[in-house]
Image: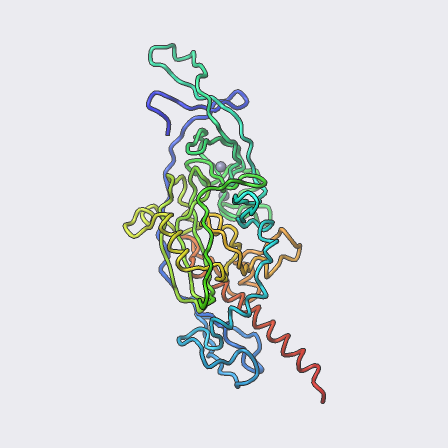
Length: 412
Ligand SMILES: [Zn+2]
Ligand SMILES: [Zn+2]
């Protein structure tokens, strides 16, 4: 950041920004937990929709072995193990096709899409960017300290901090505004923040080293570098289903990938790696991500490009990805993919687009299950498997509707 004898300053409303150092906060990652997928299993007769969990999220009800011959819930080629005894992956795939976002809706929902005409990647997101020109202020050791002068033009961008809403300035790879960020990490509930019970407008109870932004600039963004596209599956390749959850940290580029967890459609872990961002981390976002500085610098952490190429070996363009607000994940993964089953859209908010229910809300209202309760960040297994829970619930409900319609038309 900055040369030895050069101070970069932003002048705004006659005030100059000053650098301040603030202590990083790090916390431990919660222990790995494995969650079953009871919704894969058809409800027993007279026990429709009942789901029981223990306090650690384990499903307590016995699996039902339904009478054969009634529906897709039976198969000779089923999964072994505790989860989806009722479906093969091919069957799940077929059922999920109905829930895939139509290709024309991906862009408006924030997913990166390829503009075929220009071969550029586009992202649509209402955000903030006012490119402007600022100047660096060079202090020369032999000159009068008070007589600073502008000598170097810099392409700077104004961003709005996603935490405290302050404006701040960056270049493509450097912070110009070095103010600390005072923010509330909690939600505003009943006119007070859940973090500290202070009222709206109060100074934040938590301090971050710098302001942060999400990395997406306004309107259409193109060209966007570093994006890769999932490849054709080829003839005879299996159509597969994965659930995905990414954790992110803040850098000068906005949100960057810090962890990827991929589950199979049965809920088993297929891939789990910490990721070392390409840029210096401004905030590890540990409170939400659970990812710490030591995780990212551990010997097992992968580079971003390695993770991207791993994923391209795992996913094909026919893979159905399950997740919640997957647009966020695919933007940070920089992956173009179109077969998306997104629980934030499959369970739409009652106020309609663009409002969305949180995954936590959906798990509570659909299963009475309280997720994301840890103080040390979300558990990506829990989030990804919750998405599977929800999507299988939806499938099951659809099956029930189908079956009830069928019996309704039956003659006495
Ligand atoms: Zn607070
Ligand atoms: Zn801020």
